[in-house]
Amino acid sequence: MEDTGMDADVVIAGAGPTGLMLACELRLAGADVVVVEQLAQRTGESRAGGIHSRTLEVLDQRGVLDRFLAEGAPQPVGHFSALYLDFDESESRHPYPLMILQSAIERLLEEWATELGVRVRRSSEVSGIHQDETGVRVELGTADTAPATLRARYLVGCDGGRSTVRKLSGIDFPGTEATMTALIGDVELPDLPEDYVWVRRTPSGDYSAIAFEPGWYRVITSEYDRVVDRDEPVTLEQLRESLVRVAGSDFGMHSPRWISRFNDAARQAAQYRKGRVLLAGDAAHIHFPAGGQGLNMGVQDAVNLGWKLASVVLGRAPESLLDSYHAERHPVGERVLHNTRAQSALARPGAATDALREVFGSLMVFDDVNRHLRHMLTALDIRYPVDGDHLLAGRRVPDADLKTPDGATRVHELLHAARPVLLDLRGSAEVAAVAAGWSDRVDLVGARSEDDFWPVPAVGEIPAPAALLIRPDGHVAWASTTDTPPDTAALRTSLTTWFGPARQG
Ligand SMILES: Cc1cc2nc3c(=O)[nH]c(=O)nc-3n(C[C@H](O)[C@H](O)[C@H](O)COP(=O)(O)OP(=O)(O)OC[C@H]3O[C@@H](n4cnc5c(N)ncnc54)[C@H](O)[C@@H]3O)c2cc1C
Image 1: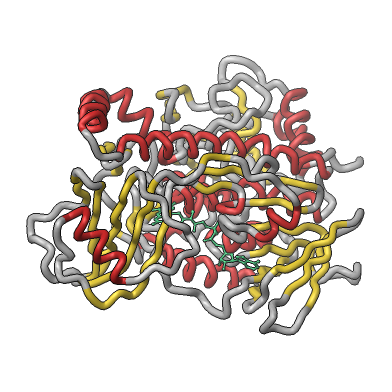
Image 2: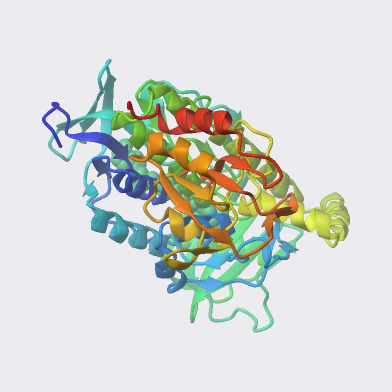
């Protein structure tokens, strides 16, 4: 990079899934990135157990999905508080949750980041932050490591639920306290009955055991109205005692690989941006991990923020573009906190909850209810508040089959380079004339849709559009129908809003 006194355009704190995904997005868009991670090496802790349809699509949009599919196992159903959710093949090319451990996700993301030229600096803990008009000075170091500083235009805290970046920036983290305690461990369980299925509720709480590898189980016990200090160390003995309390047996548990504790505290950062500091992933929101949404949401925060931040640091768009990150992603986080609180309430033991679950379960057999919850968990229905009343405006673009002069392709394949795409399905001269002003930043693609109707989750089948402007995150910024000429003024406004002013001349 040119000598600006900066060590990088962006420093990212934390090499978890969010930080690594953000680093890849920034690199793809041409920004220079350093990821600083406090740990000397990846922990290998299993943590999250899967990814949902929209995250699978996001990885597909970048051409790296096959790496994840090769290590994961598609599941036939999802769940809302352990009540089954069906999937619908017409809604996504990936209508399933993919079971894959977080440790594998992090390894694959880090490999990809390294290929893209991201610098990951380990044993580097953020301990101080100083913002000024042109950048952020990030202090690194602990009692055990030599102090160092990095200077960048922006700092993004992807440093998890206890985010130092969030605390040092003075960003509030309001929400609700924990009301329960869950213990989790990767252990061997030789005496688990052969007819055991996944999760069981008992009068003392609930427990689950999922085999990720032959012989190895991830066991989770949840005990309600029992709150333990999160900093208290966790032992195999505690997990064993908890399993005996909840299940009546420890099923011969032994050889722990990893044991941890979590709870249902739900909090969200009041601001996702404060000047030159931004937050993403668990640093911006924590909640009960019901339905497996946290990692997914972090990856999607990263995909929303990456292209915007790159455009700003590379001088292609005004700084105000960054405000749309909070405007678009804060409500998404709010909805997840809300649904995980509901899932936690549905999981509590007792006759009243049993009855509530039965009623709720009886509603879930209705397609509309099942679909509504499925869209919420998979995040396929997210609609950002962009201008325009086309049914696609603000939604994620369906992955329709296309024919281009070069052959067959799909909409999501057009997004591999993480560049905006103006997809013209009717060969419109007006659209091409407008596109010329942004040809350095926006790819104009002429194609024909193979389908007359496109499926849009939460809407239904809609006629294929005539043209659409797709942001690098796969959301539609502007679209036109086949019945009326394209509104080129609206297209110009949209291009300017998201990708900066047209080229001079
Ligand atoms: C039991 C359980 C099951 C779950 N299951 C799912 C699931 O199935 N699907 C799902 O989507 N989510 C799930 N989650 C949630 C998921 O694990 C988190 O949402 C995800 O890890 C968040 O990723 P992140 O990158 O934002 O933060 P983290 O994974 O917490 O990464 C933060 C990184 O920042 C580093 N760091 C921290 N402080 C500093 C500092 N000061 N300086 C430098 N580095 C620092 C940390 O070492 C860490 O590497 C589950 C969580 C739990 C506990």
